[in-house]
Image (cartoon, rainbow, N blue to C red; front, side, top):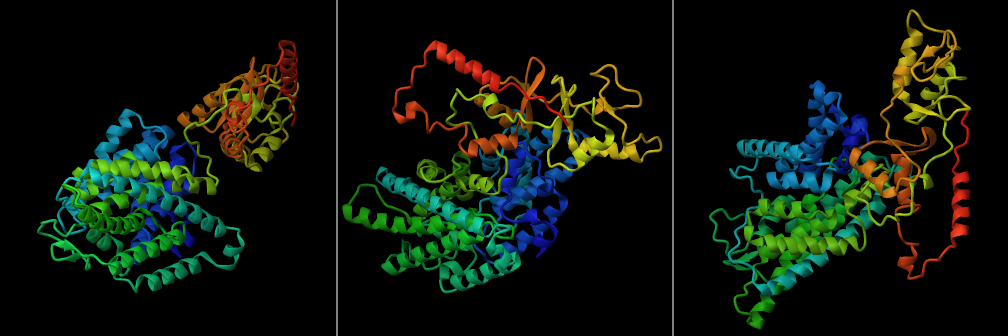
Length: 596
């Protein structure tokens, strides 16, 4: 109810929104202070309720909200969008450090998964913020253990070479399960989105209550799902012959110093994994703050423990030398595999798993399982965060992939533009245009007959300026013409000069600019619009939203119809025909005269 009433942006994980913001898109409500408050309160209630969700992703969002609030206290960051994004990247690292007690993993997670640009100075700041976050967590000691490690487990022996095929198989299973989760969770999220028939019949509060009731009813029968997930994960990660003095409640997983066996135990663990997997599939994306790290670790740990029991049994009967499979080791590797299959992170996940468990000897098994889960998962779907971005329609650009180098800016630019002219427009005309549009701005040309590009005006800035001007003591007539005297001589008497509103820094490219270069411009510079001009005359415009739309609809950026992919020989066009075709294309792309 708090999320729905005060801060709808506080629902879910928040990582897709943070990724989109760091990619250059402005989402004001996502990082507001009210979102921070509601996210913290809602997360405390949702995690303690026992629902199949985690706190790790929302804590990243909380840290970024706090960073955005702090940026408003400094003029250096408040007036500089690039600096503020660097601060948010730093906060994302600190959020992961707090969530997992993994400062190094937090820096790598921000670099690998969240940030679009991550210069060296940002890495240094992120490292410093993660250290401070880890020290604060160690001082507060919320678990009462006096340690940062959440699921510390002792690994008695190094895994033998005979165990690596099992780790490979766990990675493959994790990739498949991750793809299944992504597929069905996105389908469910699309079916309950705003405006759907389901949402019109079922309010979001009733949906959350229903999921909570279903979770309670399905979790109570099993010992392994009845308690909070971290307690079960901690027991699953431990081997019975750890030899540590602070063994957790092993929940009947041990028979003295040996692992408990039997088909009943395996069936109970598999059932617990299935129940938690189905629960997190319907829970992630609902109307409460929720992450997916903990339920993914839980599902993978149960599957890994079962695999470890099977491997231990087979290795003992096969008499493999030096091969004693420890089920706790397999639980840790399985947890990493499923989480990697869901999120598709690699380096940062391996480091996070090490910092979670202190299992330095399992670095190579972690790497093998995580890489395998990513490769297998990528064969079927994208990662959950990327799919959420696409589902919600955020204009986020991924790394360039499969571009056809023959595609140019002129092939996708918008040519039928509404431009601001100084010879016929009045103050009232311009104010009506900028206040009643959804566009972020308009190109400015010299006149209706002259397409000479002067610059670009931003709608909100122009609207605010004109409203203040008309409300002032020396307000001009609403029918007064506008002028840009800095660029055009001979303005009419009484014209209102708006030269100060013209943004000359908007990036300009030529029509023949390759699409791969346009992609890099949008992704690396974080800008939202580029103007296409030839010989100082406006030819068209490309916005980030339209560019993403072209990529997703397959108009550009894909090579599915490339003759090299289809195995066909490219047609050889005679030189004379090619010249005539290029001339016709040039005439077709000749910009039309734009009027008011």
